[in-house]
Image (tube, rainbow, N blue to C red; front, side, top):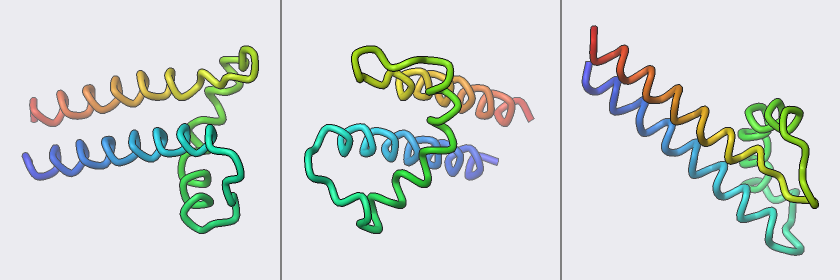
Length: 87
């Protein structure tokens, strides 16, 4: 069972890093959005970020939805791991 908890933890960590990379890319001018890696990051993170963008309007052009996504992902991760430890 510990291997499953480890895999889930790594999966959430990788996904948080992908969102973080997307945030950094949004600050860099002249990013090639057709580059396969950039497209992968955007396509993998957009399904999670999009609903939160509807909840939080951007203030002054700054998107605060990743902050809320980080909080929700951490809550979900902790809940899943806690449930698996109890099994």
